[in-house]
Amino acid sequence: MGLLMVAILVLTGLALVLVRGKPRSAGGKRRHRRDRESVVRAATRALSQNPRDPEALRALADLYYDEQAWDKAFKSYAALLELSAANPELDAFFINLRHGLCALQLEQYDTAYKSLLFARSLNGDGFDLNYSLGYLEFLRRNFEKAISYLRAAREDKPEHIGTNRYLAQALYKIKKYNDAIGLLRVVTELQPEDTESRFVLARAYFELGQEEQAGRVFSDLRTDPDVGPRSALFCGTIRLKHKQYEQALTDFELGLSHQGIEPDVAIELRYRLAGACSRVQKIGAALALLEQVHEERPGYKDTAAQLERMRELHSNRNLQVFLGGGSSEFLGLCRKVVNGFFPQAQVKITDISMTRNEYADVLAEIETSTWLNLILFRFIRSSGQTGELMLRDFHARLKELKAGRGFCMTAGHFSDVARQFVEARVMDLVEKEQLVRILNKTS
Image 1 (cartoon, rainbow, N blue to C red):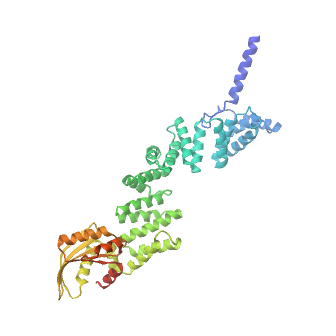
Image 2 (image 1 turned 30 degrees about the vertical axis):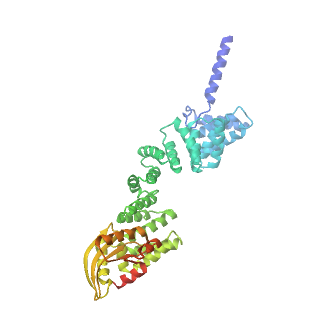
Image 3 (image 1 turned 180 degrees about the vertical axis):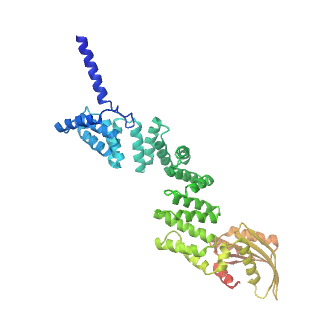
């Protein structure tokens, strides 16, 4: 009889353990299916007699959590949270974990952070705990902490997409680009629809100077409604750098075709598009874009200086050709300038050459009523500063061709060192103001 009673007590205790269950991580197996109505009915009856009944609150909280009724589960775990401070038999770790995870689902991030951080002070193990804290630290821009939590989570589930996604993006944020690229490639191969991760992957390539790989990804993302404007901006910037002006123009226009563009991105797209337009001689379009940028954000970068330059170009066709026209058109203009440089002189052009579309050299025999000379003209296609190195190269070219004199012209200006270099040498400098007067007389 005694043995029978012992067996009954053991079985009864085991049944209670199975019914109440051990504390589980949020990602554990769902409870064995039980009749929902009976659970709710029993818990409601118990709570009507004692609103602070922990077993009834736990039964409802777990039920709502399994059903993903986050608001109801959150309130039930919150009630248990109040009880756990004075009741050591309640599992404070599990209650805080579940309370934090529900708050996270409800986007109550501060509440979630406090509960999950307290849970981790009791027990640092568990995928859901570390992943959720890593995600929250990522949102709070605490990237080093996020990496620590997410790496702990990754030890439990190395192939979890979310973990790899936020770990990779956090690594990117702290400029560990190579580490980020390895994870991002895994994420984007498994989830190609994750355009944000693909964009970050392209940014990582870009930061490492791998512009070809970056450009391919940015180009693919240009039409995406979320990352399209930013991708088009980067894609166009890369093409501008490589002097692919028509393609860059298309990129920037595509970026601006999106709806709801971030103001900072929109203003930069217009600014860059203006630059691309000026490069392909669409001066009117460039001027209109710069005026829009200046109106929306006065003082943005060098917009005021660019506006002045575009207005001048817009009113001077020869200056447009000098700075941005095609090679044949530019060389034709250089010929006209040389032919008219010395009034009433006889001019015989003996050589003309172009270097990387940056400058042209024209060698000519000039004869007037009083002198005859071989003169070298250099036309520099720049509106910025020209330094000493360019003039040293020009001087060497003069000696090579045995020219008696040289004129070096720019639509910008020469540095002080460059001006000092030409002193006592048979070289004359022509800067923007004088060049514009020359171009105005050239037809």
